[in-house]
Image (cartoon, rainbow, N blue to C red):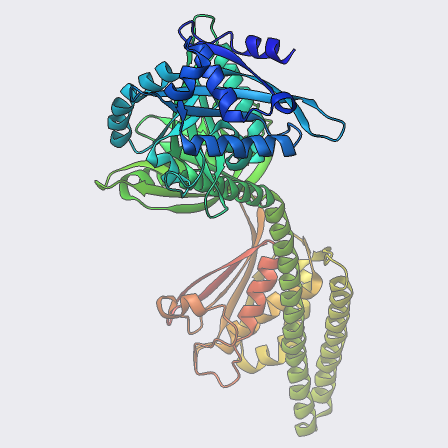
Amino acid sequence: MLTENLVDETRFISPETFVNYLRWNIAANGEPLHTVFRKTISHIHNASEKSAEQAYLILKDDLKKAMELYARHAVSKGKISFEMVLRYHTIQGKTIYTLCKANITEWSKQGTALKMEGCHMDITMDKNAFAKDEEQHRLIIEGVNAGIWDLDVRTGQLWCSDKVYELIGYKRGEIESTYDIFFNELLHPDDVKRTVEMMSGHFKSSAPYINDIRLKHKDGTYHWFETAGKAKLNRAGRPVRVVGSLTNKDQRRRLLMELERYQFLINESTALIKAGSWEINFANDTLIWSPAMFELHETEEDFRPLIRNLFQFLQERDRIHFKALLKEAYHNGKAYDVTFESVTAKGNLKWIRTIGKPVINTDGSITTIRGITQDIHAQKLKDDQIKNSIDVITARNESLSNFAHIVSHNLRSHAGNMESILKLLDANSDPVQQKELLVYLKKISANLNQTIEHLTETVKAQNSSVIPRTNIVFSDTLNEVLDVLRPTINETNAIIVHDTAEYEEIEYIPAYLESIVLNLLSNAIKYRKPDIRPVIEIRTFFDKGRKCLSITDNGLGIDLSKHGDKLFGMYKTFHANPHAIGIGLFITKNQIESLGGCIIVESEPGKGTIFTIRF
């Protein structure tokens, strides 16, 4: 059976190859192995056994290796195969190469080897042909930065160039060069199956054999190599030889693995921060997106990003701005970092942040812009929510500050007037005048109570989110303010002219309206010209459908070119008036603007001032 298998195994051998079968009855005649070898070689060359003893001498090194291999084969009970190349010297000085394959086929009950069968093949012609090619190989090998290998499929012998040994850290002769050594000791275990499958596929088809493998270096580490080969087939289509190359790809492979690791980290990082990368190449008119960009813009899988359709994801108001940024980056090398509200392919609005950086070529030109785009929609909504909360808190604080100033300023006016009346009462003993002063005092007291009531309502309203407006008869508020200022009006002999017939009511906050009118009228009297009777005109009117109020005086006036930007600032005064605090106009402006209105001032030094309020 073994002989039949060996015959079948060697059918692919060329007809020129001489074959004879080896039978060694180990226990029967006790012939030594080398005698059996000589008999076998004599049969191959039709020589007598006697002449073979003299004509064919096995090289001592090969005989020693054969005996050692036989011993390992016997001890392993056949698990280690007996297969090797034997060299014979002839009396003519020639060297004959034979391939010997054998196996112990019979064992005693005690486990002693009884019979060994196999075959001898003369492979001298193949060896000589290889030697002839070796010089050509050497020239080729020296010209390329790669190792060359040559596998004899029939014998399992593997010839390697010095470069192959160098690549794995060895010198020639330090390691046996065989098929078994390669697969069992050098090749990484995880690469064995793939290599066998790819080699078999190459033998059966015209598919090229190119394979990335890991080989064990002399220092014990595995290095990456690219191996490529081409098989030579016999007439039966069976492989007899494979020649190939071995190229060091370790650094490149490790860099590639490192690159893949970094790419993984980048992909994970961009996924974590919801960002994608992109590249615009103006030279070839291409736009490249990372996978995250498709997800960010909610596009279909077959969407093809192009430079010309880049702007479709921006709203109309942002397209001109973004084009200008790209132009600046392309022509002047200026990077950008901007935020837009984009429109996805599904029509959803999404806030994005895009950062672009031009790539400057060695000649100074710019053909490429690279960058990232980040989905910041959730963060933007949070930021807006925080900003709105801050605005509400700020407005609330300003409202509370205004209220505090109103209390201070308005009550001070009432208190000052009451103090003036009381001083007049103390200084005047005329019953008629005292009675008149008491009437004023009662009015001031009533107005003070009303002011306190308005302020109380304002406090209640400020405890809620919105201060409610109410319908107010403007003339009533004006009369209350005039009553408060009556002592000052009388003292300065001021003329108050008012025309409030244009509209009777206004929807406003009572405390605010009283404070506004009181501040503007008291300022008009306070900043009058010395020794000139103050004249103040109060008029209501409509302007483009909006209710307005103007207060005009003939006082000192204000140099707006100097003080216009500070006019409504807190604690800002512009005249040498010892009673000026600089809070009234600040309060007035804040109150008007908090309710959606505005205040306009027209003034020249020495010509008076006009304050116009658009409610």
